[in-house]
Image 1: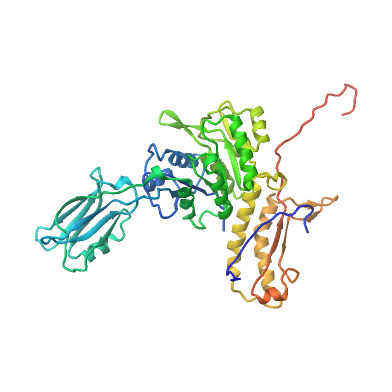
Image 2: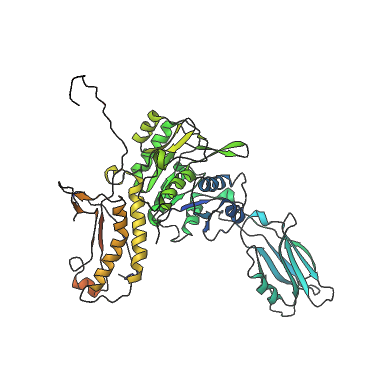
Length: 487
């Protein structure tokens, strides 16, 4: 078996008593956009930046645009966007003939990105007044100049100057160094995003192009209800160290939502996914618009990460309250919230003008260990933190006196100890309230690194953490006593 190089981190569950970079609040989304790069994921940090890179809201790009807007309005800071296109997506292109009689095409100009939005862009080739040079200008359908190159003498010069342009690509179609394009106006054609033929396969493929970006984050596909994308997105989340945020379709009846949660839990590793209900109402230019809840959920999660507490449950009136959202499509009161919780559906509760996320359950069929999304989320981010920190020790000499073991242990403890001090791990204390262990252990010594293993140039680090539970339910009993009774 081929041996890997680097740091490999895995996680598991251990029942019973324990033996005594920065985390990512990013939301990774995929969907249809007006334009934008389709071959890579792009990190976006403002609504304006999103519109500049991926375009404005359109009937087909609305779900992703609205989610991006809601994410930033509610406090999210980092959005990783994967544009989705169909299998036959194409870039708009035009070939320009040479200036000689019956000269073949000498120049090809195309949009840098696939999509119909660049169809009918105009390319104008014009000879300079002195006849020694020429210019090439590209304008969009509104007449705005996208590129302008003057004083061109050779095609290779044009290609070189165009190389830094983010909107168009220029290539030569001839080896003739003296060839030049024919004067005139030409239109780009043939661009298509083939959105009519997009399937879940294209959506997941777009997410995959992000590679390791967004590890430890959340992932969602706005506009795709859980019955269509749940299985594929949860599988992707498992492979990419993310948690999947899911929602039912906008008009789903409550019984459908409960049934959907059960189906996902029975067939998938639901510890990596959460189902959120209902859809939300947001303000929109004096009116309102209905949006699926993933962007809001990711935003309240990001608030906790921004404060450095990635293990915190981002729910409740204090942590999960909406600041910009105006309401929900279905009022969720305490009674309905309890019913949703029984099916492991996360309700977004309303009371008067207040809207807040009031659950953080996963769809795991093992609620004892992974009943909350924060359990898997915390492990995901610990993996990322430990991996990034230990990369510094790859290829270091493993001396026989244990110095490297000690350095690695200290590096891992430096990650875990602040979390323990902040209450993220459940410390064990004795009857005298003395700490028995801080809620974590790190072992890297001869007990788990045998001579044969060390000889294979491998080091094993065993980390155990005891995650702190949360106060999901607070029981209060108030008793009336008689006037003369002792309290």
